[in-house]
Image: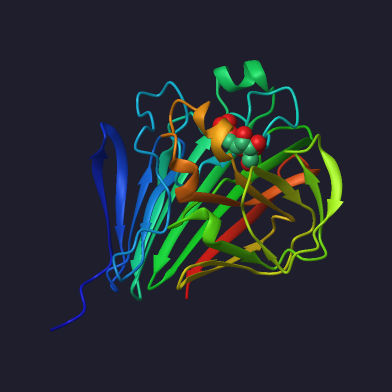
Length: 285
Ligand code: TA6
């Protein structure tokens, strides 16, 4: 039997326009035009690697809870803009696709408009490129300053990873890094654990996290590598904050951990006409 081909097909998912990517290996991804957001990534063995809340909203009133929301031009509350910026609630436009050598790739783009300029006066173009192949997902965010003046931004790929039981996971690769503990009054601390375990709320921005991270979840392992994004964020809302989110079920905090690639500690300056790109790669091992 020959190998099936890779493909990118449009479809409706919970009433919103999306694309299904299929790699020749059988790996798949689902990418929504709303938010330019990856909503699902299944490795070739059919195993879903991303968390997507069953209570997520698809009516445009909020960003979709789960998958990989794109935060730009502001990460979290690091400025005056709405939390996590302006593009996770907007409809992105397909800007390219490629199905070759067994992989499937799709790009979606979004630009400033009259509405975004009322909140942030800068012309920009942001493009997300999602590629799957075998047991690997690459997500790249490219930002172009299409205006005449320099702007600064923070950003993140806010990746929600699905786990079997969050109290059983370990995250390696953070030891020795300085972090801002957003769950503890933004205190600056240093990571001492070889393996970060989660048994309470975690909301940390690790600075200059250039090494690859390894998420272990029972017998499953996921390598997480980023380029261009200097920081790594680890977030789990735990019991109380999860209960306060109406688009998550009360016990959903047990099924997820966000490990995000971010520009957070120092805003990035982008001059007129310049571009910046950052990538997060996930490899199931
Ligand atoms: O990236 C972590 C974080 O900034 C947390 O502080 C937490 O609030 C999370 O993002 C989710 O934010 P959201 O606005 O999507 O509820």
